[in-house]
Length: 292
Image (cartoon, rainbow, N blue to C red):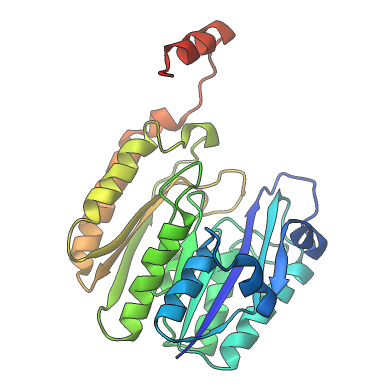
């Protein structure tokens, strides 16, 4: 068994004047080949979870690239194509599955849907390849992303403290599918809502309830994963906003029903996603009321 594991992440603020070139990725962290395993092995990052899963199944691991840059303007075409090219080359060389750590809000000079474009290219190379995808809670989910992934899920925490666990979850789903233990199917949808980042904390409402709904959904034996994305409004692209994706073992009607339930709750809570500033005195009073 040969598994390609890669990371290609950027949260793109299309309003930022800061250029996102390959140098910016290198400044934050860009590694290729064996260096990926040396740098990320044993960490709490998604690629580390993927590597551990692959090792447990006795797979040969191929790590073409792991690159991430801090939020800034659209990714330059040259930088995007360099990373995507490394990943696609690894797929061309042959593999049994691909486990990818993406963001979900990457915009490049030549594509508004950085992740969907990458996944579509991989799918063109290998139409039946099992593909696992982890995304940030701030993912702007698109048709291309869902259509070209086998299973896609996102973080359930903001601040993001469950990256490893999320990758472990989706990686297990896809490797189980590869071995014939399940047949993943996905249902997704979104609402016309650009929520404020300051209203997206998962310890507070309304995200707290939406995440609880996802965790409750995952208790069903046929549900493999459930995600409520908060979206990233600073990426000015058509699919920006809140969305939901449900991964099930074959039962697509169940996925559709759960999707609709969580989307309905998202829309009902839309006013809570609007940030309203408070006076300094009120903020101080709130802080003083918090437990030690």
